[in-house]
Image (cartoon, rainbow, N blue to C red; front, side, top):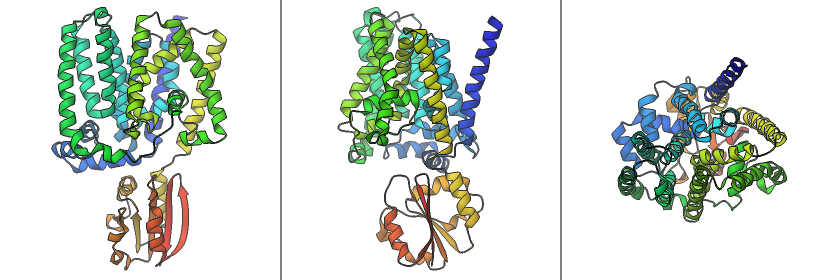
Length: 460
C-alpha cells in the first residue's frame, strides 16, 4: 500500500513537471520576455545596472538573463524559471506541512504554472517569497544561523527583483519585533540582519529608485477599485478565467459563485486557527503586507494593477487556504478540489489557445505573405522585439520601429516600398495615429487581430 502511494505521488510530481514544461515550451514568447532578452544580450552587466537607475526595472532579472540564458527558444529562455518554480513546491510543502493539498494546488494551479514558467520577475517572486516565509517561520522554531543567513540572502534578491516586495520583508521585521520573545533563533543576529537590510534598502532607493522618477511613470495609470481585494485570491485559486475587466459584465455572478467557497475556507481557517501561533504569524504577515500595498496604491496605482504584482503573498495565502480546507468535512474538501481542478484545466486551455499576444503566429502570418518590397512597421518600437525573436527570413532593415510621436515619422522611408505592414497593440491605444497617416497614401488590403495585436496590410 505504501509502495502504491509513493508511485502515485511520484506520478503526480511528474505530471506537475510535464505541465510546467508544456507551458514553458509551447507558450509563445511574451512581449516583456522578448524585450528583456534583447536588452540583456545588448548590454553588459555594468550597463544593465546603470539602465536600472533610470527605468523602473530592478537589475536582477536582466542579470539572470545575461548569465543563464544561452540560446533563443522558448524553453531555453525559461528553463531556470521552471526549475525554480519546481523547487518552490518543496518550500511550500515545508511551510504548509500538508503534502497532498500542496501537491494538488501546486500541480493544477494554472496561475502559478503560467507566472512560474514565464521568464519574468513574478516567477522569481514566487520562489523567493516561498523561501522567505519558510525561513521566517523557522526563526520561531529553531536556533540555526543558516535560517538567518538564507533569509538575508533571499531578502536582498527579492529586493533587487521587485521593489514593492520590500514591503513583505519590512512586514516580517514588524511581526518578528512584536513576537521576538517567542523566537528560538538568536534575536541579536536577526536584528543585525534587519539593520543591514534597512541600509541596503536605503542604498537601493537612492541609487536605483530615486533617479527613475517612479511616481511620474505610474501616477497616471487607472486605479482598480476595492474589488481587487477579492479578485486577488480568486486569481490565486482559479487563474484569470474571468478577467478583472469582465467583472462589470454578467460574469460578475460567476465570479461571486467561484469566490464564495474560497472566502468560506479563509474565514473558516481564521475562526479555527487563531490560537495557533504559526497561523497567526503568517496571517498577520499577509494582511499587514497587503494593507500597506493597498494604502500605497492610492499614490502609486500600479502596485495593485494586477494580482501578479502581489504574487509574493501567495505562499501565505496558500497556507491559510490549506488550513481552511483541513477543517471542513470530507464532502466539501472533495467538492472544492474537483472545482479547483476543473476551473484550472479550463484556465490552462484558455491561456494556451486564446493567447492575447501570439507572436509566433503573428510572425508566421507576416512571413508567409511577405513580399520583396514590403516594409513592416511597429507603431511602438518595442513590439519589434517579440516579432524579431521568431524572425528567420525577413531582413531586419525591413522592420521599422516607430514611436508615439508621429511628427518624426519619416515618409521618405516608405517611398521605395509597395506594401506596408502595420503591427500595433499591447494596450497603448496609439495605433490609430499611424493607421490614419498611412491610410492617406495607401489603401487597406487586410485588417485583422490576433488576440490584442492588430495587423494591417496597406498597398500603395
